[in-house]
Length: 190
Image (cartoon, rainbow, N blue to C red; front, side, top):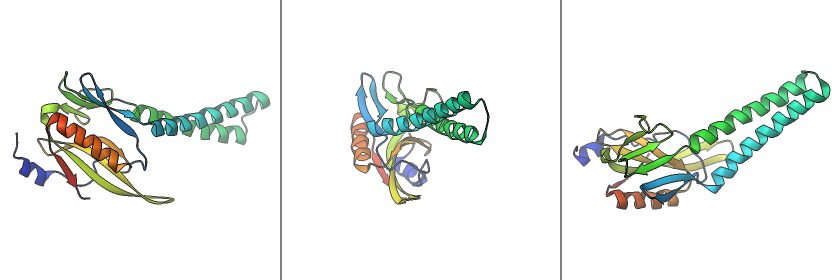
């Protein structure tokens, strides 16, 4: 294991993932073999809204075609909008509902369905710290804060765990993981 102070000096204090939500996207829960992050109710409703809009537009486009038997501009527009919402909704479903797991039984952290993806997984013994980073996001309706929980690895690289807008929850979840796995918390300024 490398010297923690050396790793701390090398690790980036910039967000590992740019952007982020202005609401709580995931909640930490304890499992039989460790911990996992599950999508929050707010995120589930947000995703459901995207998918519902997609199906409504696609249904309207198909119904319009059946009624008119014509591929006119309105059909194309309605179908295009429905398809865009369908793609965005499915992206949200896949990316945010994919597992985020700390599994002591398999000695792995992984994010996603591929437990051995080197960019999104690691053995638990490779984790030297938990890093919290805040970021200000500029949006159409003003600015908001988003906060990341990252794993710091022995080689000073990082793996993003979650990224959302509820700092209090990020801190509580990080403290739970820190105590359970006996690893320090590093608050980064960005």
